[in-house]
Length: 154
Image (cartoon, rainbow, N blue to C red):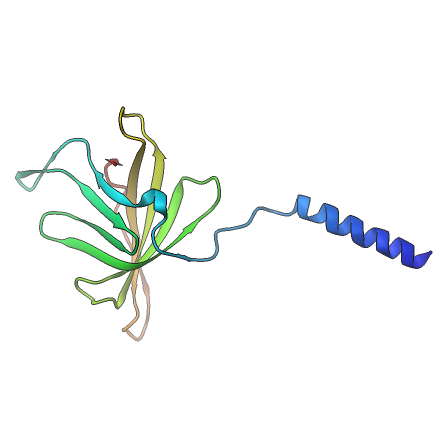
């Protein structure tokens, strides 16, 4: 009788405990850029920046991310991301290649939404969260101070 009770309790536990568990967290980093984010993203209009008219842009490829202003490019490779199911945000971790030659790791947060503009399926904006340089002894994380940029469309 005891073995039967133990068996019934074990089966009931295996059946009902997963139904009450919490959803999986996005704790692991996945390689490359998510397919839905890949492409050339542009602002709909030009903006006045330092005396010139400029259209903001962002290029996301499988293992490459490029965005920047007039004379200060942001070139990143070795992209990894975290994404939680049913979420509009993506955390991107990549290595800056232009100034630090891959020693600096940059962190970004991307927000992807359905577009409200005709002929544009999605809109995207992102913000720089901070960076970490591995070559220094302290390996300190430097928090970014900027806010989200303009909406970009593909």
